[in-house]
Length: 333
Image (cartoon, rainbow, N blue to C red):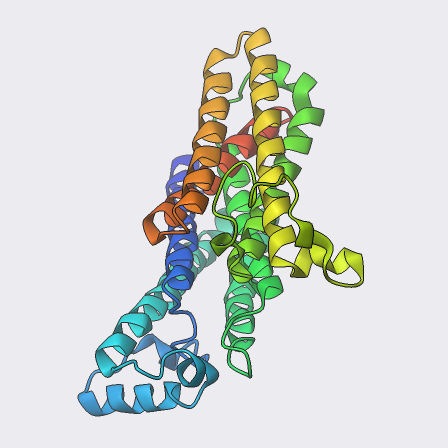
């Protein structure tokens, strides 16, 4: 007897909500500079936080031996350490909860699933495990000499989270009713829009990792110029697009603008086919995201606005992915 579609849909929906929460909590951890507070990776024993004052003192003493404390937080007391510790601990704990919430039903359902669904869910399970390792690989880069994580590893960690979210959503879509068949005619532009959305998100991670959001907090000009003079200061020139704070912010801005324009044009195409609801959702989610991005920049990356901007990215990605899904044929499990 196979598992009911409703049970699978409910299970995967809960997992998807947990992934979204993980992305947002990860963003909050980064914005509060809490990610380097736990300096060891203990997937099993690390589930227990310090309970006694002696345990807290030992944890804090261990943190003091790493570059972040020595170079940035020499004036931090135990109370301040507890705040950043709980932020990072909560993020790691939520990751463990996600793993259990996904893996336990997956094992229970295994013998009752079709072969195609088994393969899809096995990929999701693998992505969850890889994401946990990727998180530690990212943190490790900030525990050596420089008290900041590698922006490349940050981008890889965030990208993997969106890939995981995408696989979960795609599987959920398989259990939902078909959308408008005429979306098939828009599969090319929707594919490009999805790629642009993801590229913009990756550059957003570069901006965050390089702390480039604190530069040129005006829009649309940067220091009174469309293209700042220092955008190609590094050599070779190509490295500016991934290492130069000014260039990375410039690229992220224009990727966001181009993605927004593409979303509006796609919305107009949808309306021409009579898909008013889909067009409105896409246009509104794209408009919301670019407004949040500009506000986050102008107000110099306050935590609440930055998290709303990150949620806007999740929303836009999900909307574009759903439209792209509906432009393709639905497999039958």
